[in-house]
View 1 (tube, rainbow, N blue to C red):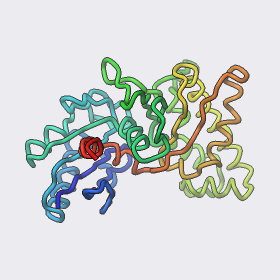
View 2 (view 1 turned 90 degrees about the vertical axis):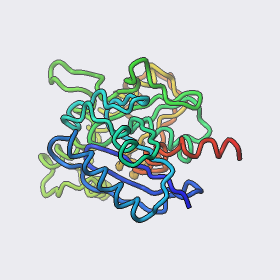
View 3 (view 1 turned 120 degrees about the vertical axis):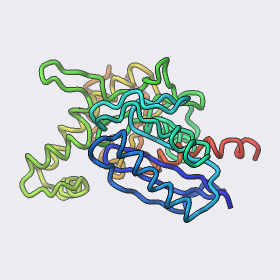
View 4 (view 1 turned 180 degrees about the vertical axis):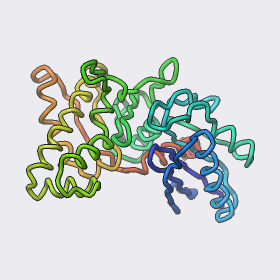
Length: 298
């Protein structure tokens, strides 16, 4: 039986999954993204995972990689990674795996992959003009139109995390509205907070005023960026992904309420939804090229 391996390289974790012939995940694992020189440590970690998966599952017909950073999807090179994964620029996992293992590799930016995954099997099924954003260590975005991610002339389209620069605080959108910022603020401002995002939202659900105020402030920052994308691209839906998307309406409701302050009255018909595939969306999107032809024939 032939399998396909999906990998998702993020600023916090590296995930791997094995997909069977029916495009269902039959094995999933994750490890912390290694600290230090990313251009050395991440390839070492990926190869360790590849060795283990090949020994366990044998015949692998392809590898799909989703990764943080701006990616040249043809050559496989990381063109830009910002501060999320220092020293990652120039890394080429596609070339490494193809040369070492003799297996074809498809590679994409993580949010582009997540958008494709949600379009294929998740919250964006049936929508051909939508925006996908992920809230995690940073904030990523992808405009998806006519069945494909909009990559841009230099593979940099959709990089919403670097927008809304505030010269007074010298911060970008993701430096005010990412999950990592929320967790840092919670640790500083909430007495007895353990550092767990689920705890923060659970305490707010139970009426903790400090937690509720912090989430309200944070979701207003999120709404500012979403408003810009609605005004710019008029997507039918905006899919919000990342681990926090599991909060569903408890996340969407305050964002939707804040949007009214940043859009003309009655202007937007865009619907906000949370990702259905959760943190596995990018894995599904990464392996999609290996199942696309089979679906078209079927």
